[in-house]
Every structure is written in structure tokens, then in C-alpha cells.
Image (tube, rainbow, N blue to C red; front, side, top):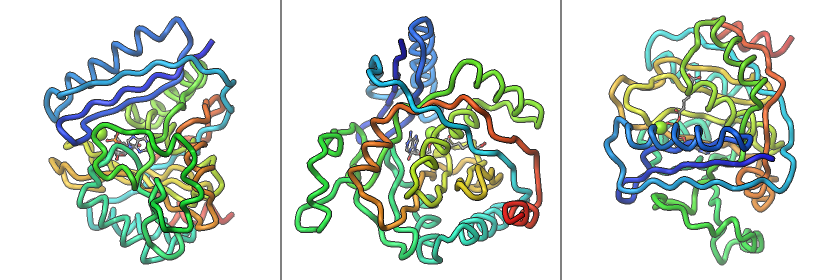
Length: 288
Ligand code: WAQ
Ligand code: MG
């Protein structure tokens, strides 16, 4: 029996911290305590509200592999932004979409989920289709109308939910990450989001920058290049950050929402974990 657990902490209208996972019965209590402690101990201050939801999964989760992981060698935010652009371009994202996404995460998206950008023209795609657009026919999915506390721009973002990693997978992943010097829990969590998102064929790529003040490593994820960690993606102490999914415009939004929010996905097999590599090598190895 598996349970999906999710935590959201907010302050006024803004999202402060969140966490998700899929756990067996015996780990539910421990996991709720861990998430509650995270919410209450957050560097942004004590939240006004914390919501923890626990649901028994009725469907067996889809089992996937985690994306391969590599860290790009960059020395400062200027090099980091250049690397982000080169990687995204390499996987087919257009210049307008790259510029839009970089601008949005630099400003801080201020939402709990990922913003959606058309990978090939750079326009923003509303997650919750509004009337009078052609997408209105997609809006019958109840999930699209879920009110999300803290999301003032909720029409434009989707929060990935119902994902996790098997206990065995977690042990193997933690060990492989430790072997390359990575011990932060954020890597494990972010890799789960990125691997689930990349499992949806119309997500061409993802850009992620933590909104936490002192976590300055972000990533660009794609099926082609895997999960590429980018250190110095923002300056120390900066509250900005966010996530963007670059979507193939042929996407059916109702399918995207259903997959991201509802389909339980669990990682068991672990993709290759590499250490630090220069950008050129990261771009080359993918072609070979
Ligand atoms: N689904 C969609 N978007 C999300 C989710 C989710 N489950 N969780 C967070 N976000 C969005 C939201 O806008 C946050 O403001 C933003 O992403 C950043 O979230 O390998 O810590 O949880 O060292 O602050 C990257 C790790 C860490 C890189 C990312 O993100 C590495 C991180 P945070
Ligand atoms: Mg955060």
C-alpha cells in the first residue's frame, strides 16, 4: 500500500516551501514530521499556513528511471547563464523561449509550480485555459481548477505531484551521488521532479533555479542531455528562482495536467551519475 504525501507552506499569498513523495505505510508518519519540520524551520520565516495531505494511491505508480546527472563546470553567474542558454539551444529550445524563461526565473516566478513556455516560439502557455481561447475545450479536467493556496498566478503554473523513489532506489541514488560529492537532499528531490517531468514526451526541457536564498545551484533537464546541474546560477542571498517547462506546442494541456498532477510515478532504476564536466564535453557526449 502506497501513499502520496505533499506539503505546502505559504505566507500570505506567497509560497514558502513544499515537498512531495510516495511512501509505504510504515514511513508515512516519519515523512510527515520531516516535511513539517522543514516548513517550520524554513529560512524565509515561520509560515502562516502549512498543509500536509496524505492520499492512499489507488493506482500502481508508473516505474521510471532517473535522468542521468552531471554537473557543468562554471565559475560565476555570467558563465552559468551562458551554459543555460547553450544547453537549452542544444536541445532545440528557441532563443525567445530561453530569454523569457531566464528573465522569469531571475525575477522570481513567485508561484508554487512550474511556468509553461512554448519551446518553439517563447510565448507563455496558461496551465488553466481561459475562456475564449481555443484551449477552452481542455478546461473540463477538474484538476485544472484546483485552488492552490499561495498561487496568485495559478493560471500559469503546474505543480508536479505524486512522485517518489523506491527505498532501494533511494539508497542507490544517495550512494552514487555521495560518490561524486553530492549529499544535499535537494538534489534527490529535484531529480525526482525533473525525471517525472521528462517522462512526458511534450516536455522538451526544464529550467530550475531554487527560490531558497542560499541554494545557488540550479539545473537544466532534458531527455537528450539529462539533468545538468549548473552551479552559481544565481547570486548568494538572492530570493529569486522558479521552474519553467518548455513545451512542444502540440501538447494536449489536459494530458499534461493529468500526468503532472495525478499520475503516480516512482523512480527505481538510477541513471548514470557523473561528476563535474566542462560544458563542451556535456554537449558532445550527448551526440555520440
Ligand atoms: N512542481 C513544479 N514546480 C515546482 C515544484 C513541483 N513539485 N516544486 C517546486 N517548484 C517550483 C516553484 O516555483 C519553486 O519556487 C521553484 O520550483 C524552486 O523550488 O542538483 O530547491 O524547491 O543541486 O526551491 C535544484 C537542485 C534545487 C540542483 C531546486 O527548488 C542540484 C530547488 P525549490
Ligand atoms: Mg524552495
